Image (cartoon, rainbow, N blue to C red; front, side, top):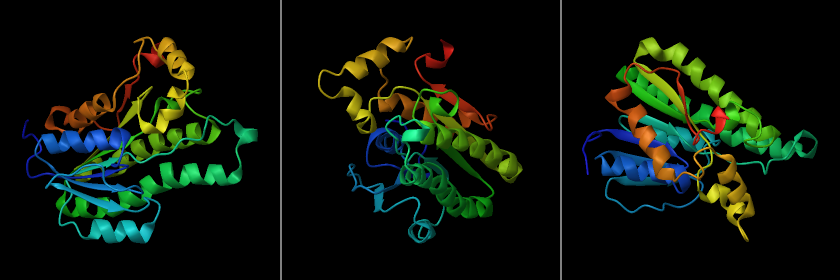
Length: 240
């Protein structure tokens, strides 16, 4: 157990499962106080963990939740939803809106609420969860791929606009990560999961903790000169 983030307050969206939960556990292990936001109930019990149930796309809920916090050092925008790999003609307007509501609008709402506090502090670190689907096709359907491209663009613009104000913004682009969000790939005989592993140069799926470790790096002083960088954690997927 380290203490790199002792006395730091970390806000994590999507903290109830998958990568978000792994990030929360990692920051807690390093001494941070963690505030989790998710539409699901908390999956972590720790004296330094505080959980709020609600949607990232609910502006009033986010403003009230973030408003309670005296200071915020790190924001991890991790909440996200998949679209079942639906191509454009098979994407209903309601699905498109749902994907963008959570993956893009939700990130925008949470970031703005947190940014107000960070700008007053004249410091803050933001780590946005993108995806390899934000860089190449095939990592999702039409809506998901478009939403993650938007996340990467938003991350770069955030950095450009607020870098000189003491705000450091970067992103992570995961590939095949074994999380509840990808549970469908492992159903039955797990043929889809096996196929994805075979197509990944590293030959396997990653654990959420491996993405959490990269998050700790981006949130630490070790990456202090990194701005607007999107780090792929994809087992070499995009190197094919």
